[in-house]
Length: 155
Image 1 (cartoon, rainbow, N blue to C red):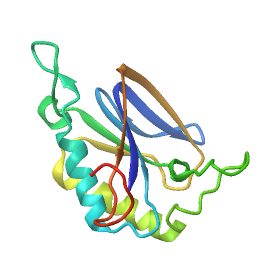
Image 2 (image 1 turned 180 degrees about the vertical axis):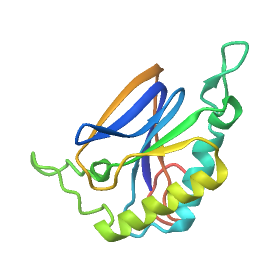
Image 3 (image 1 turned 120 degrees about the vertical axis):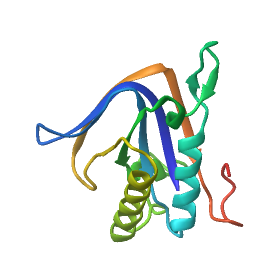
């Protein structure tokens, strides 16, 4: 699974002018399921993003997680993270999971996040979304979890 985490002061997602998800300080997480991803990759990604120490402690060092600071999670599906731009000028998205599988894994991550963390908001899968955020820092981190024995991404 691929993701991009942005530490935010606030973030929201609108669909057709309606706010469907909003958080205060926390993490905006753009998620992309790739072909071959399973719940195991989703679980590893969620565990990592909940424990990643990218929030300041009392000394101003990035030493606390979103759980430590009680921040929110805004989970937004974004298949375009799977873009392959190596050939020509039109990205290929063939490594992204099929829509039904992408939705299943996104819904799985959302359910697991809600079971593990008190503040979880979402976008709307496959919708035309407008994402508004105030990036804090800015801190933006790609987090990619590959299948065991799979692609050479961060583990």
